[in-house]
Image (cartoon, rainbow, N blue to C red):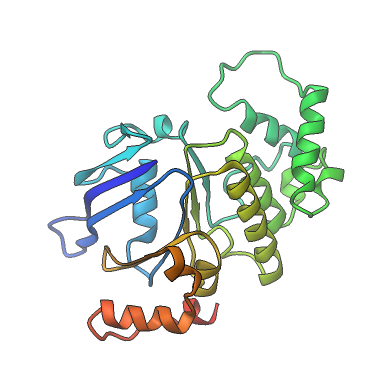
Length: 265
């Protein structure tokens, strides 16, 4: 469903601020894979997701989604294939619109817009049932403006909106990082349910090693713009934070992992 072939990306090339963000990243996700991505600051995690989403062009290499080469496609054209949830809960929803209006807008993504606007009774019931699955009480507040919701509620709503049309690929960029632990756990539970229910191919960046291990069927670790660990299957199921730190130590040539935020998260 996703194939990244040897992509490179350098920012501010030829200047004193030159930064080699991606150095030959290759990754293949099969249909239904749920892959978590971890690594320290500047490892290349978000750059990889943004490259897949088309936020900026790569210097070389290619990106295929469901067999289609999207390397030169613009961001808005790729958006029809993707669902995205960002780190900032304020991104991804329209604050001045009601919950039900946000969901209806997401459901109509990619369709021709007309002067006719409204939410049909069938849709109303569908959205109510979807909101119930979040266990946040939003099904009883469907006419509430989204700007009045908490960060966790907005993030959970954004997740529903991003998956409403069953995207070919779901991109989650530290989507629980700005939430308190209890709310983050609820959003991650909802993520698991939706991904498993709809068999969504998913790439999830997280700063939390425990979350990276607990969720998904595959884990990759990045460092200096490269993938240095790729763990899946039974090996991932048995993985612990201690094991992961040992593997990092071997893969990085004896370097200590010095990101307390990820270890203690």
